[in-house]
Length: 144
Image (tube, rainbow, N blue to C red; front, side):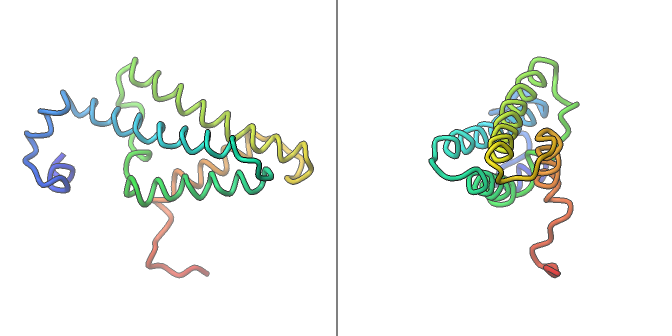
């Protein structure tokens, strides 16, 4: 809470003027992040590009959202800390995004662009790597 308040240039107590609790802040972060991702997914789905281009565009947008817009924070926070109604809401949005990514992969498999395989596992691998980027990516580190 101190870090959030400091980043916003306010006292920690001022945060509670806008949010009732830490859980409300956590929910807002997840909800906001997922709204961005769902918007990007919808944009990609509307495009006439091939499946590989769409998937790449979505992954790039996802990673930029995590690193540039959210500074590597909101999606890495613990979902289990959310109360049941908030948890359900976040999981529903997360699942919509997951299904959208999976549909792009299935389309690519059907069109012979991606290797045959389990689209669900491919999606988990891609989203898992992207979600953990704040743990494994160092912009100052070596690329090799």
